[in-house]
Amino acid sequence: MTDQNKIRKLQLLLKKEKLDAYLVPMRNETLSSDLKWHDNRIKSICNFTGSAGVLIITSCKNALFVDGRYTQQAKLQIDQDIFNINPLNIKSQCSWLNQILGDSEKNKIVGYDPKLHSIAEIEKYNQQLVNNNYQFRSIHKNLVDQIYTRTPRVENFEISYHDLKYSGEKTIEKLEKIRSENIKRLDEALFIQDKELISWIFNLRSYKKKFNPSIEGIAIITKNEAFLCCDKKQLQPNAISMLGIDLTIIDQTNLQAFLDLRRYNIDSISLDKDTTSMFFMNIFMEQKKKIKFKKNPVTLKSIKNLIEINGMKIAHQIDGLSLCNFIYWFKNTYKNNNIYELDLVKKLEEFRKNNSNTDYLGPSFPSIVGYNENGSIIHYVANKDSNKVIRNNGLLLIDSGGHYKYGTTDISRTLSVGTPSAEMIKNYTLVLKAHIALADAKFNYLTSGKDLDQIARAKLKNYGFDYNHGTGHGVGSVLSVHEGPLSISPNYINSGFEPGMIFSNEPGIYIENKFGIRIENIMLVCNDENIQETKSLYFDILSFVPFEKALIKRELLDPEEIIWINNYHKRVREKILPLASSPVDQWIIDATITI
Image (tube, rainbow, N blue to C red; front, side, top):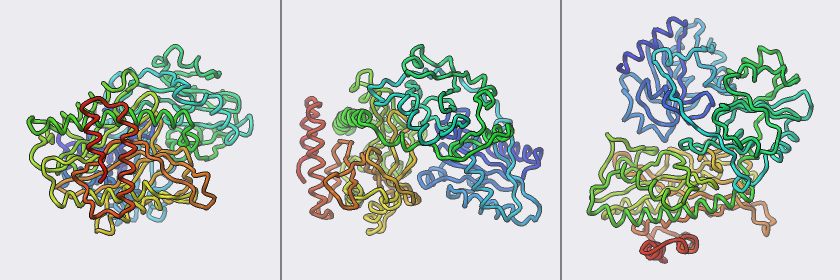
């Protein structure tokens, strides 16, 4: 079926449902972009394969909304005669709707699948279009699913107990914290749809699940009890008994019974607008119970305990050795062999598997391996059509990570292939300067994500460069590699950074159709107890892989930046050399020599 035929079929359904427009988000019923093949409705309609986006279909025009990471990728993948490309935000979507539908004075009906949109999202649409005669209507049978036969594959994602030696805190202790802050009375309950938070609270993981080991389920917590609705067949025999609490498990086939609030003897239920779908809110509203809106206690999850922090440090040390082994192999192999991007994706996985015994679970996201112009596509994922051979001169951008039972990693390095140009060397050094600026920042609880982002971004703006993504994201502990609630990005005005939180630091320069450069380490927020002033927070780096010495132009660096690089490389030697074997150990020494 061609893209045009798909759109015609959807437009017929719009007419049947008496809709003026229909929203198709890059999201599943857990409100995450952790998609199985049958959840990827945007790809089905327009071939876009990024991890974030919204497609809007109308009777006459269609548009794909993507964030800056995917603008270039969308241009390459979709038919722009059928779909416009626009920035991904609700204001932009509403502006586009007004442009396409706004001439009509009649009420405009926008349909959406209530299982795929949060309460907050639909509220924002309504707020933006409150004076423009728009009505947002739940359509319970997804329109995209109506034009496809999409039978989900049966996949076995065993749910296992995440041992206390990895989690560092018992479920009963986590529940006590949550109840003390969120559930004051016996007739109150907290509803949680956020699968990351549920996995963390109950110390459960689906270790065999690709890229994200969080379990799939929903939970209700009362003052004295806890209830989990999930696929009971996936639960390992000891998973619940090891928790040490009385947790009631209800199979997902009995979802209707699970959502009947009468069984819990409660009068009110608390929902997080950002992580609860309209589907569940509608069900609770029909039951005429009091609904309270309250943020989920996700900050508890994002502040790692000492066991989790130690596990993350071990994971990054093991991962650093794997990356050093990989880079050494690559540097000594590519010149005399036809090595392609997809070969390197497989080789990265090999080195991680071989270096960690049974503790390695799998990649934490699809590896980004882009040579030259492919590296300029920010979240490029190689496929058989785009797969480039690594030869001649250029830059190879590698962004990859792994899940281990004790921690999660994410690291980017840009490698020199052949003889780099002066432009490549200059731009790499500028990105390194931006990276150092954030890594060396001193800040406090009142500092916002936007403030931290600007510390790195300003270094590149001084030279006329910018990048179309945030500088950093939170990292979960054996959960999603992208963790909230905070981020280091130009749009994130919230503050609240605390010791124990973990973030990436990944500025970049991308020259379209030429090359991309990104340097990324993972950092732990720490508190300097010796500083009594306001700026007592700083970052401690967890990632240890040498920077690309051949791409560093010393003349562009300040004396303090040179000291920082040399100190970092000293730590790389301290952390990785004791684990390395010959001849990789000598390569590490050479790669970290004082500049």
